[in-house]
Image (cartoon, rainbow, N blue to C red; front, side):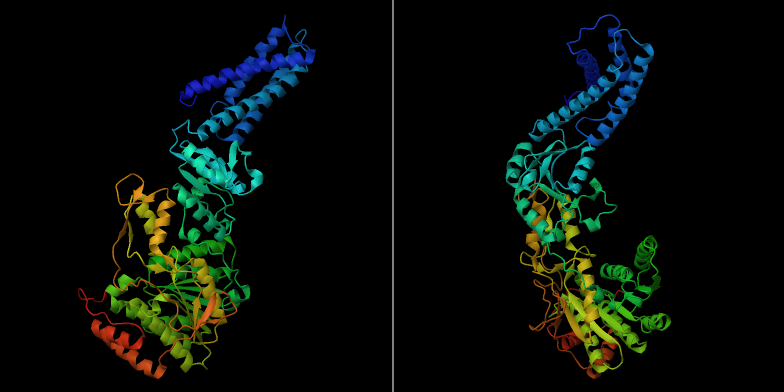
Length: 629
């Protein structure tokens, strides 16, 4: 049946419907006369009229343009409209003609019976075709799918998928025993224990997770359980990330590291979230970057009076401004958005912004953060990171900014690279200023955390792209590990940590357990329905180790000392880190500025090694590292 041409399928359906029309006229007459009906005389005309009206009406209503196994709700609506129109016409004609021996009740009883027969015929065909598809009798589909979850999202996704021509739904999977063995949308609901047999028998290629309300930890459990089946696993995002409340095929995405980490969020303390933001003027430096932009969103959501978007990149700050402005208008927020082009490393530039707009809170996220890039360009890295922080902090002091919060990194702990050393020096500057200028009214604090997901340069999009291209997936070292956190969680914790600050604290975020990058790559490959292997067999993806990049460490740390203190938030800790007094540090910074002007890379590395505990000066440069300016 499935292999027939479209015209043949339509003709078959047309003929079958004609037969059902005649059968229901005969049944209606039999019920009305309370005996098996044998038409005679003018009664034959009823059969002719029913055929002459019904088939043209059904054809015009588009009943033969829909595919029986798809678009169930749409087909039922079409059927109701078509039979209603037919029933009205049939009733009017029989009333007007007054055929001898034909009761008018036939014109009411027959359309009702016809609707039930047509509905049953389509439901039967749908069930039979889908049942045969489930057990491998049709190989025409590019993808053969199971949906995990029989909730509203799963059913909406099933409807959306069935409108396509290249994917067939085999059935549903659900954890709730009350659904097991039942039919939903004409498809069987399987228990998890049945899944291996169904995958093998029905040649399932994909499993779609339609559980947007599930906790991250539960999603992680399900993914671990599905990983051995070597089918392509994709997922719907969380309810918060889906737009409009309606599920579409476009919402389905690849499994991301957020799903693999499965860390349940801690509800934010709203009093802390708004303490440094609500009804205040807030500046965010690096506003166009990954962290900076999320900070801007949080500031806007939290009711700031004015938000200063400070960034060196015209494109980034313009793009961030357009996004935030659209949201502000949509939600009718009163926050004043001010995009400002500014290189914080330029002396007095941020000071001018402070004098003009008088921010009460500054989130300093402006920095060069890519380790290999800063390693290749140490002069510009130090100029931007260290002196950008220095000039911004001094401007905050001069213009009585209430709170100055530095966004720091785990790479500042016993740094093995210029980027990490420069960020640790930024921390030291703020610690020294907080100790020296503690009576000025400006509260300096810094928040240190690891890698954030989906930020620029994140490894996860690269892995997905390499898997799509057939590999190899490149990992720097088999033992390399990293901490990961979502951008939204990191920024929420940054804001809350800054609100708890009293001056000079180094806050450390609980990043959970470190993740082995090799294991992460392996799991992403297997959840794509592929296997890790070195041979050329179809479905194999090779993992290639390319070696550590310049300045890269195998393991990242969050603490220099080993005695973090808890705070009122379960995922925020305070670290006690040694620092240099401001009087001594000021002299070293003057020397460093001179080395930057002279482009003295060797002297700069030596001075960083002197100021930053744990940073070892590179023994040998493969080629001169010069300024990018």
